[in-house]
Length: 134
Image (cartoon, rainbow, N blue to C red):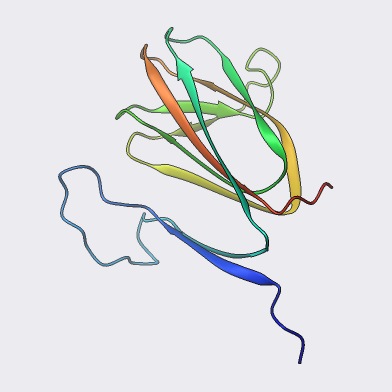
């Protein structure tokens, strides 16, 4: 039997600051993501500062990313898109205290666009990559 070549990554949404931890319920609004990602795994942490309200900011997603996790450092909702807001009206609103996790087993890269209706917000991104290009 061949040796396993991947590892399992489990991410779970943590309770809001000051809230009591509780059991994770799969049928609740908690986020649970389980996926297999080949090793070796490279991790990158990025902070996207958004000092001006309602202004579009962008950051590059590293080439070969297989898992992307995004959250706002402060308790604010943030709008996220994969094309500039002027050319792509559809966007995703990441609610305050929530984390977005995207798994892309075939590797992705590109630009992530974000904006906040409140000034001085920071979008935190963590990406995991296996070093494989598409």
